[in-house]
Length: 83
Image (cartoon, rainbow, N blue to C red; front, side, top):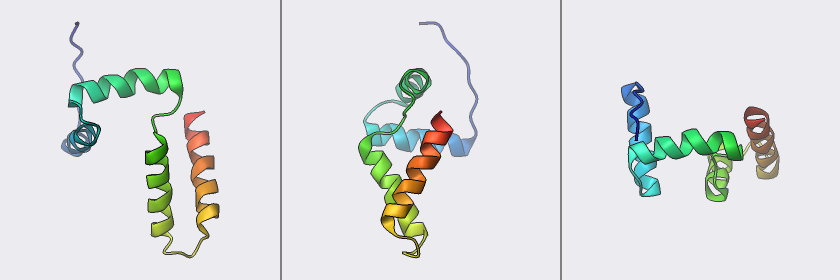
């Protein structure tokens, strides 16, 4: 395979390593998957990841916003970002 050089900050490397470990893959494979599938599928999130984001957003609001409203807002934002 041809080699492509990409530079990342230390914080980015830590995030990539954590995500790669959670997905049971290497950092390089994770980068390949995200680079190639993001443009073809339009969605880098699994259903479980989506629900994790909603739960984190709901927790961030400390219950001041109904969970269904938080989920609607998360879905709207993700659709706007990925469009």
